[in-house]
Image (cartoon, rainbow, N blue to C red; front, side):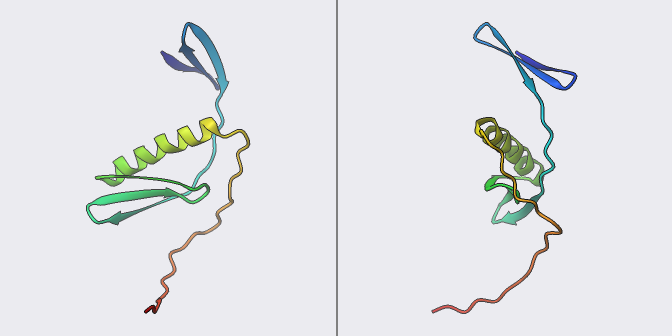
Length: 93
């Protein structure tokens, strides 16, 4: 069982009560369609996920990011400013 109390998160596991200070991070994500699935990728860290809809891809990305930050000792985020899609043509043999 778990729940939030103000700015803290309480998690009851294995008969113990854990208190976590919840941190908020502003992340920039991009979503695109690839075949019959949507891919969602976080631009700040190397984490991505997919789903059959944009909403499910973003929900799956949110879960993947929660797991990523749960295990991260030191959070190092890349600051992304004004991302844009730039097309380039590549010739190859």
